[in-house]
Image (cartoon, rainbow, N blue to C red; front, side, top):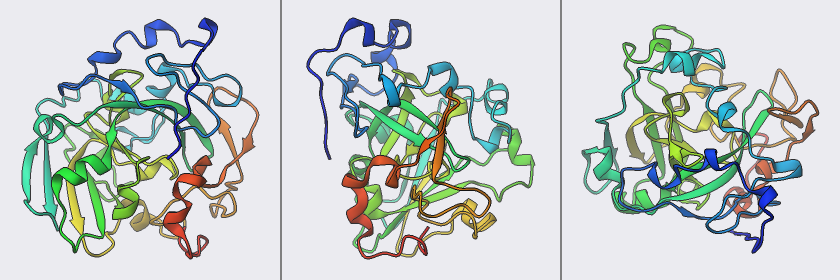
Length: 306
């Protein structure tokens, strides 16, 4: 994985202080937040200071990141999650660890992630509808958590399940999807250093509409792969069935890698629009992370395994 650092950044390029003044307060775990560096291939982040990306990779404003969301558990409209999640309580929170793992058990979230080093990673985040954001997520590599959980030699996949509670998540009263929401990765994808378990954004605690208290980000895949408000992690030998693949298998494959050469059946994937912009730009293979992840799919037909 390539980390790029810029030794000196003009003050004019530093993100507004109001967006970062809570950087070291966003987690209950004991570790202090540290800057892991920009993972955008064409951008940089200075250690200890947040760079505001100029040109093609400007950071998407916090207000947009937290108010334009896909989270059907709180409604199908992009503005509904923020409106409908205002009373969503995430403390206490428990996560069940199951399947091909050395010690299946139910964890308190704070205990599960205690001591895992936190860092900030700035990712290009893309959704299948053709819009994208550039988001500074706070969290830790999923591989660090997997190492702690000690899956068995039979584990080939890892599955993530979202909370199913229609009293707290009113969107689950709708039959638009099969609940609870389930997503999964191959174990080697989960162990890639880019795959992040997220607990915050812009140095602040993760809001409910963004998947609090803990969610998944896989930056070379479409956004629907990132399960939110996770309550179960299950290691399996066989490939799990996943929510969107169950709902519309012709349109949503298990892998969901960003691939501009494979169109969605109802629209092209060759172009994307960054939120806040009017022009569209070329979509990059693997969302711009080819060097970091293409080896995971060596020899695979990426049109068949979409």
